Image (cartoon, rainbow, N blue to C red; front, side):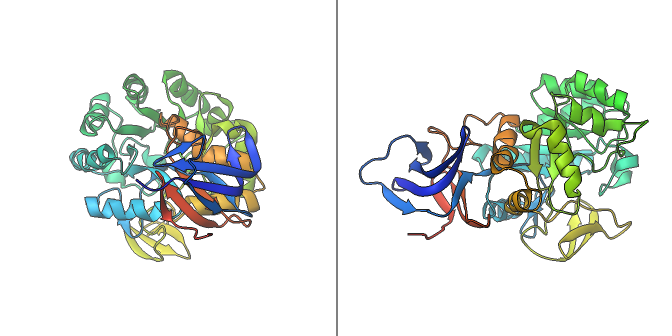
Length: 381
């Protein structure tokens, strides 16, 4: 077990607010409320200490895919995102053949059982061909509850979320099935009306998959799903804050109407995150990444992102002008609550996992700790 540590002198973001000249005590793998005499004191003056980031929608990184890779590939992607502050990550699949998805869910479930990932998110194949984005239209299907159940069962208790176009035949029944099994039903890649979206929420949907993206735009006569998802207190909205998926004004609109307690920053990252430009596969689809923007080779649709959550954090504060406490809620506490992990991660409180990120005064990442061990050592003395 690693020696006890005291991170002292930083601006620490706690659930109760920001503490200047604060300290975080780490005893083994957990945050503690008192430090033993022999604890190592690490001076982090002039820095921020915030909870480790929690990403509920992520397809890969470091050149490796969560959507179809081997154990080694998936762990490479996990490590890439950890080095950018994401200490808890859900692995997202993309649309594929149902039998393949079920088999791959078994691979992901093994890693979830080991604690390497926090669960599985199925984004597709139960989505609208009208709003398919970077999903193979030939493999899309209506959300038959029996097929949804097949994927849940294949995940061996580690299915965390399924994205659905809930207006499709079987959509509402599938939402009810997911709610009964404790799996998040997320409205996304949808062509639903305002009224149809309200029906999905009443049936048990609780998340909006990358709000604004892959759904009808907000209209003054046809308010569509965006309005329904923003105004309902039961919904947490995902936002991809990379400067490509959303205009800053759209992001601020979401924060204003949903409030900081109902926003979850995600990456929707694909293989190129933390790796570089080039040609990649997202499921069966070829993707070109140029200047950090991923687009399908055929058709040019945006194909996920190359975002890491440290960049989303910095952008939210320095470009979007959001309060640091609100960003911490969106990037750590809220997604942890959604996953049912708020008793372990998402905030810096005694008894929780010692997952934390050290940022400098410009909000650049300089250190990452996961369960008491440095993933990125800030080497501050």
